[in-house]
Length: 406
Ligand code: ASP
Ligand code: MG
Image (tube, rainbow, N blue to C red; front, side, top):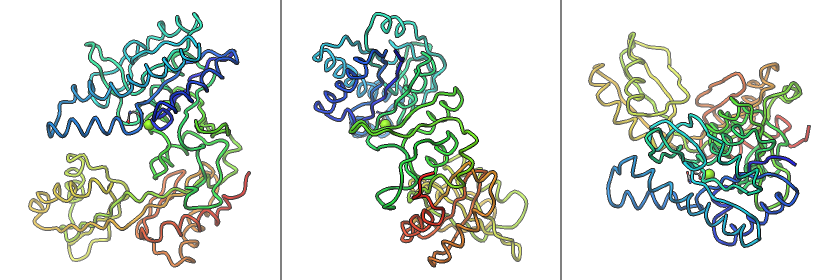
């Protein structure tokens, strides 16, 4: 007998038929003699729809009321999933986040989990029940409903797996697992059997969003091994865990493309101490997330800075810079959004050299110009023209031999 936490995302519980199919999967795992805690998301589209309704009434709805509203999405699915299990003669009980003992801090709409009181769940598991828990929500010290940020059901599942010392944590979604590249673009992309937490985090930040990043960080911190797999078939998925020595033999694990970035060019600012600080302070205060940064060598007392921001933030970045230019006595900004960020990721880069050279040569052979470069211990990213992003992904995938199983 094993103790299993399963999480089903919004598409997996998207309508009544799908909820019934999920109930059958839960029953099958349960009939094998396992104890089961199941976390579910709101039906796909529901959370967005609720947000749109609130915004149709008020431009800035209060965070407390947004949590009250959004928590209803998951509350619907827990009850329907429990009812679907009852229809299959499986003893099941649904819990809101609060009832499941998920205590958070007080920050509405992006609360952090502080502690979990697993006693009520333990009690029901021992009584032979399947426990269905609403993802994405908790309760703060004052008894207020909180939510954990978009995609937060993943975090609920990982945190519960840690709290009840589950033997297995399975994240069911609408893809088969984590691939070496986007299979829609790179035809011979392969599903990875295993990947390290750090690689998964870098791929997520580079445009292959399979899971909420915070939940992967949490899993890493508490050593929760989990599997990402599809609820629409029975194929094995991808196991995400701490890196082990053999993982380093593979230099590049995957290629990711992020087409949701914009390049911001700040030119003609005075080349003196404090200019860059003022530019990035203003962006930080406007909550703009800056990624790759390049400062060109100053010339005649004038400096230029180039960096990337999420496309949705580019307008805010532009506005935030206006007062800075006034203060500095000069400066202009231009936004280019026809760009893409291509990244190659792998823990093996720590111990292998030549990855950057191979990537740059591959792009050169394709006649693709590199506009910006950034590197970390396990990732190399380049900014290129959006129109060439798919060609670049295919070429890099082939150059690092990612189509071959290792
Ligand atoms: N329903 C929430 C969202 O759409 C949480 C989740 O699905 O994980 O963000
Ligand atoms: Mg989700």
